[in-house]
Image 1 (tube, helix red, strand yellow):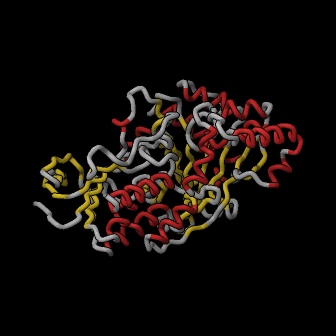
Image 2 (cartoon, rainbow, N blue to C red):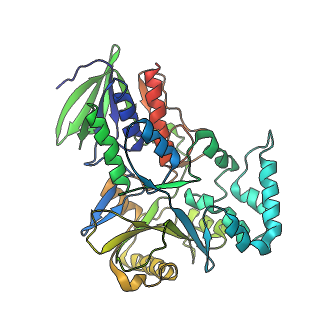
Image 3 (cartoon, rainbow, N blue to C red):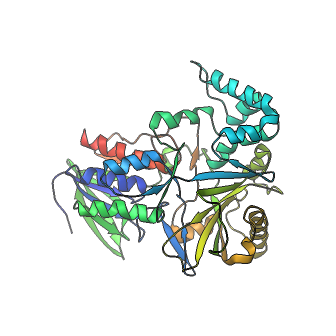
Length: 433
């Protein structure tokens, strides 16, 4: 079967970048066919069911930059603005620095003052980026301030020695808006579904369960080979956007981020969860030490993790679900039963400190390793796919009709905001080509 029409675009992958690119182009007069090998859209921005309970796959909070982008695209969707809290040595801190945090840390005012002075110096012209670890250790003595200043590295899934100070400039440069976190009402799958519904309303074509096999070029056009349920056919198109992970664009020795593991929990709704709060982080002291242990393939005695509440319509009445994300040592992507029990026990003990009564109201648990995650979703659970100091690969190629999108290519930033912006930028590149 061959499809012919003017200004045709085939997009490979219906993750957030593919969805944004598809809707942007479709509303601009292009005929877009969106291919997705899975049976649902959203990629990491989705949900799944286990034993009748609904859980978030990965993406769960966003910057307000995505809110503004959806308004531009005509997608009506509601977000909640919630805070994130950090549990550190038995004390709660706001994840975003505020006056309350400064009051809590007043005994370490020398480190705070020194660190603020360092931030000002780092912004001077011609200052080269350095690692977060080097920067913080230079200006703050070991202790609470030192640890809390490095937490951004944990949130990005890397050690503080692998994240550069230039990371902080991305927020204002690309208007991601992560200083004000937004949580989609109904969860990330509802968000992804809203985008694809708008896309289809505009006449776009969605092909679920359809894999991209490859393409050939015929003059000014491309023939895209696809496969669904064992049957193959071709689509003729003018442009192709590939939003899948662009592993081949990175040198083979490029360091990869650690993949996340997760503990899925269903609890009775009687379990109190902090109001107006999304993410709770159990933050173990000396992240430079314990994350380096993980990075080197060693299991530290204590390690940090984070958990958030899922308020999803698919859960049985009187319950809600929780996702707890943590990292296994590098190279450990599966666990035997004894190891699963150990990690489940560790997480539940620490969670009980953060959410008293959790064990009493617990109805269901399941631990998913990186291999389990990949088997369930056909996706990688890495927050930061590649750790590199250089620029990310371009969204353009040597062929002006072939493009890339997603969070493994431009713009910088390893989060949903960067993926969405990537989709918008590649659409604009086609529109102006």
